[in-house]
Image (cartoon, rainbow over all chains, first blue to last red):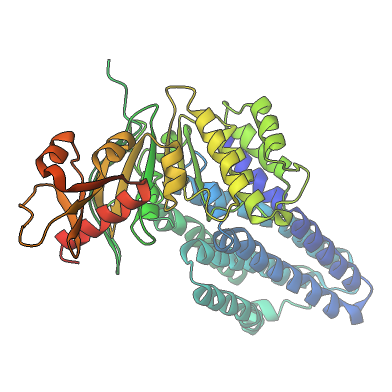
Length: 222
Length: 296
């Protein structure tokens, strides 16, 4: 990683520092509420889920779409970098900005289910898949923000990705191999789990590499 | 050994849905200040975006500091300071943060000069960019470009929206940059007063086409308005290099772009007044003449 890449990634961390800190705090607060007992578990997990999803949308919108809209993109592109460098730096930088709270909050959720005596450990595969889905979901939003300058299209991406979370929860809870293990005392990492996880990883790989082949090769950038 | 031209554009074409930049060729030599003048929508910003690699030409060649654009833009931009009137800094950071950020990227950053500019432009480094007025914002962007001591400054309408005092300060600063003979400036504007003040070469552009390009002194020396008295019953002979001709009774005012003493001698006693033209008058006459020639 060269010096300019490091500086620009550090710039994204600096400019989004309050968003990263605030989202992490809100997500941890959600986990704290969830830890207070079975009754509050659902409320806490909704806060946790909403925080991660909203954080991803705001991060991608603020750091890419707003940079373009508020015309700071011209300033960034006046620096010694190519269009390809810009796209690469944005993908790496914003992925890292998301990964920090996501990793912390995902680890927190897994630990919560594993540690809480009344929560069956059979829930762990679902929680892991949900965390993986939120990462893949963010990568779709990031990919969309790097490819379109249209506010309408970006809004559509956000709506579709937000709706897809509910659909995903319904989908995995509809899979007998996962649903039947939900109340099991120990997690079962069966083939259905690995298949869903593979789809998430594939989505992540496609959406994170697509900008290198499309957005980075655009000859007109503004 | 000949020095590399700072900007070379050859037969450049760039088409959009409602606008086409056609067959544009221009050169900027080291040490020159080129005023790039055109009305709104003439293609100034498009040309500058081609120079800075933000756009790629459909045809022709663009080379900046010896690098083909847009392919070589990362290398070229190490030595380019680009400022555009619609360029904005990050709202949620201070000017000091921006200065530190740019300084960490460019080895040529001159902290002493940056400090001088902060003082001269009356800026407050600790202030958030969101709190700067539009004039202060332009000054801040210019500070960040100037203090890295680039070999080539490309300025797209940098003085638009500034008050006369701020414009004076900036133009003085640009003149300072040119103390080093290896540096050059391309300065786009529709304010011909600013351009006339600092440029040594002028290029006019209109409706996507280059209208004329020459040294400022050549423009000022070769363009004149001549008022003639033509008594009734006599006709003015056909004259070469007459850009426009306006008749008012027995008086005819001609505009020429090839003024010489020989022309005055040829016109003889009928000459009443020879009027030296400002750059703005030359620009307007030139553009109108070319539109007429192209039947627009």
